[in-house]
Image 1 (cartoon, rainbow, N blue to C red):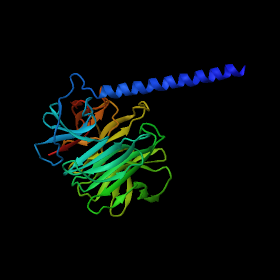
Image 2: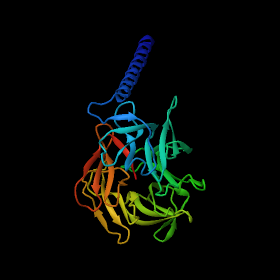
Image 3: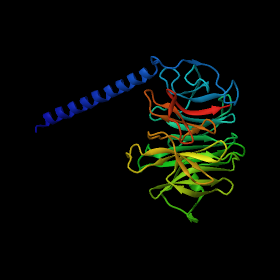
Image 4: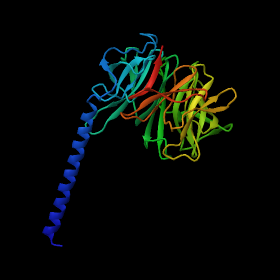
Length: 342
């Protein structure tokens, strides 16, 4: 092939790639602009003050607002007895969020020129930053202890989904009373089958704290299996209790855990069903949700749990009895990461 023709082909290829790249940028920009416009029929949202103080203004839900418009991704609040009613948006943006006893944890993206960075930001009751830590990956789980003194978070440091096996996580703990920071639960001593255990493939995620704030439950993954573990903060140990539990969430009385469980025969992309574990008897009860739930469930009270499923504008929240009865009911549209206060 003549040199001139080869140069012409090369130049044409470069131009084509440039055009494709430009079209992708335009399309992404158009999509982002579309998300900034209020959707027809969406919830009523107005800017205002949002408090994390329990009982401040009655029982409320604070959550990540997913509704398209100028307040998308901001923490917002709505009355717990009228969750589809008007929302108040805070101006504080979070990718993951949780709150208890006037303390909030906000996993946040900081926009960069080339690549976003992420931080875990501890918030006070008025959503003011108390302290923060840089994150090593993409935010996925966050929890505050019942008394508001401990916070935990999990990020993906490799991969971006729990559905498969090719991922790596890092889970961190911060004691707000002492300032003690554990950058990774992998530094804790693992007791498995009555023996100390170490393996390079260990991952932790989904921390939920005990009411006395002396311990926690979490998921441990190793050797292709997941385990429920009980953690002891003073001893810096975790002990395996049961196989095939992920993203546990402890009931307010500390007696039951709701969790997602991989069920054989389901699609590898949607493998989970929700169960409740009674910690005294270790008996499992399947909940009346037949869809696959990839979330760390929240208890609204001793009888009801709330979780997210994909929706038209990111995610919707559903409520469900915690005793296996009833049926799922949509609680809120365009909402994620709820905390029930008051």
